[in-house]
Length: 30
Image 1 (cartoon, rainbow, N blue to C red):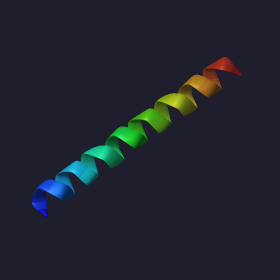
Image 2: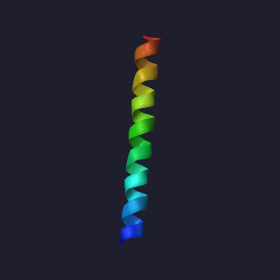
Image 3: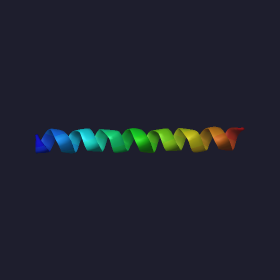
């Protein structure tokens, strides 16, 4: 459970970083 928990948390963090990066890029392009 601990290992799966870590993977899930890392995946959520990666998605958040990608989402924020996409948002910043979209704002910059507009």
